[in-house]
Image (tube, rainbow, N blue to C red; front, side, top):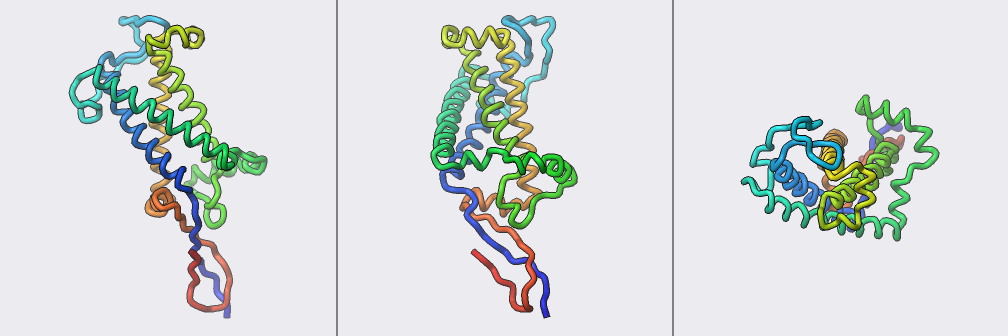
Length: 244
């Protein structure tokens, strides 16, 4: 007599450089967000152009509470020190990740294929209905994951770096042309804020997906590298096999 059962497989999903850079990125982004809110609190309004028009900001917010900022007390200078240090730490860490990815071919794993694009609509519908890849399909990045990572790394990440440099008076000579293209220092500050908001949105969606697709399994794979998935198969009646 035969029966269908789920066999558990385990495979090495994330290599050590991916895991290290992932956690360094997480730490850097957290501190950048908290120190960025401290900097924003010094003048919680945003403008377009090269100068502040105090009478007509496009966005004005109240100050973020101290428990959300680094430091917890109002200190623009200290907030900038934290922000600049971890900004460069993030850039250095991202550069190491990209160099390693390019040399090992890992970057190709993030490049959408023709098959990915053909299944784009189906992937969107599946995610809306909270249906996620299972079995062998869970071993690979889907099209939405690939696009999200590429947008974050090369889109939002690049915009954060460029606008951050444009806001520094020390970079006036080097970034003058880019600053003019962006529309001025206040425009750069607004774009920096919007890019930060995009990163926060990505993190929220990312954590939600991690939770609903198997919190411990995903955490384990990013700590030890090992990821488990189930595959259905029809075999003769016998104890369930486990593959590690």
